[in-house]
Image (cartoon, rainbow, N blue to C red; front, side, top):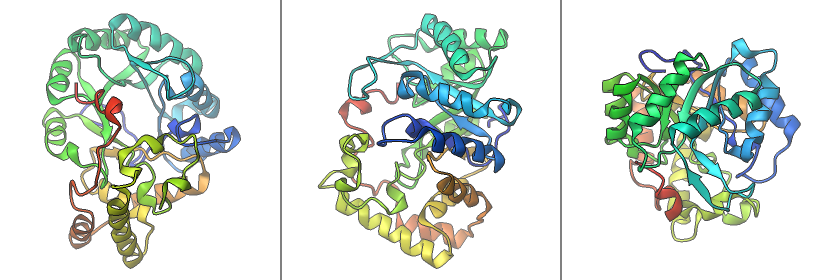
Length: 325
């Protein structure tokens, strides 16, 4: 990932949903999935301190115990929770002081002596990014962190942070469902030699084709608050998913595999991290790395799901306010 970043498998594993946000989860199934990921060469395991208010890091730590050398371990700091309920308020804290405190807590929960890729999850624009990057650089010098990353920041912030210490990866939402990154972010990371880690690469599950109505989601699922899953946008977005499904049938793969293969075709510097809590879906996702789409097939996918064709913003207004600082 990036000119000087860690080497990871073509597809990673996002663990957020193992603790909250996407309805009930089963710990044993989640542990089995993480371990199966390592068995299949899915080495980039992505978590964050705010997922489950620390639970997710503890879960990942248990899963990778005894297999540390097989893992490219990524976690994040910067979003401080007000309680366990994801609907309660959050504080974006990118201060150097919290950076130094948060990494110690993450190392303890994960049960490791270093983190391979440590991200600033979100940036508070009132804190100079040079200060945060400087604190992260101190963690690298101390051996607690191997590489540093940023998530959902602006190109200006990315350049300023990179001038303080090399940034290995930028994590942002990127998929057929969300292609804003292609306008400014992707050219910038390539200019700077930074890898791009794509979260929600199958549109928060929408591109699976298995979500056809809000009633398909658990009552606690945070996607109920997402404009793209709500009436007015849903029908238009379902039509795009149907286009993808028809192409997948034609190409002999699943819609998820086609969406991931399309993303991988963007370049080797793009690493998707689809999230799942089940081994069978992990295996389906990982198999996408073996698909090689022809230029004609890529063009057909682009036509089926045109750039910026999805209806509705990425997040609710509160979520949108945390992006691009």
